[in-house]
Length: 352
Ligand code: NDP
Image (cartoon, rainbow, N blue to C red; front, side, top):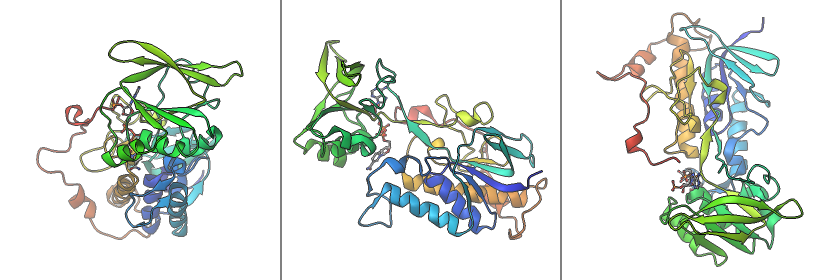
């Protein structure tokens, strides 16, 4: 039988690599199943201007390379492959199993950090024309649309970022948003508004992406939300930027999630309902969703895992962990707390 790992981390965005860094520095020799497309959504970003410590900004992929290198420097072991199945134990001390194809890895604790993926519009032509005009990443695909007419769907910061980036290549960018008010921050909205080739069109939704004779995207049919009037505009590229979906399918039915699939954690900890299983980053958080907040919860998950391994009587304490009973103090819930709670929907911004 293969050795039982102290901790397996599934996922490799800011949360996963930060959890790897901290567990590596705690001598837990973490194993990270980082996926083929390691680095998470920041791999598809251009300049990151809001990560503290980089006054001049840093490119997303470069930042993720730094995260990865730093975790490796302290002994994190990386598997650049997809986790295909996860079987989580139900009792304190139970082993958890993570599969990468036929290969099985066993662990005393697991940190889930699979992040979130781009949400789809689910309209006609979207799936069929993906890669043939419909895209979810301007950073990746904008250069294909030099001098073209393009469309961006969405009203958040991502949509503005996509539009601004795209406007450097495309002749025209129409941002289509379903409401008159934008969710994007003022600074991003102003930047988009100041570009001469960006037009903001509201309140409209895309009804269909229409294929041309050459098999690629040729037009988008739009509907005015209030009047119901429809119109078609010619576009060669359409970029969908309407938010994200948590990648929790791997643990569906095993850990508690909210109705949209975000993993629920207990109080301010990263503990899921399964003993020894922790969750961090965009997989949990639909409110803040920043690289820096994901990294913060990755750190929390690492500490929670460390305390679990040290202080759970059923789990042999890994060599190299210090003695002590920090966890009891850290985890002691205030009176009346300690239930798994779904985020208060009423106090959260809409996610659909
Ligand atoms: P958001 O959830 O903020 O915005 C999603 C947008 O898509 C909303 O305007 C929403 O409309 C719209 N939308 C959702 N579903 C549909 C649908 N089915 N049809 C049409 N429109 C739809 O996601 P973002 O990805 O923009 O941002 C996520 C987080 O990342 C935010 O916190 C943001 O600030 C941050 N971010 C920061 C950046 C930066 O600072 N440089 C860059 C990119 C993101 P409605 O408003 O009506 O709900």
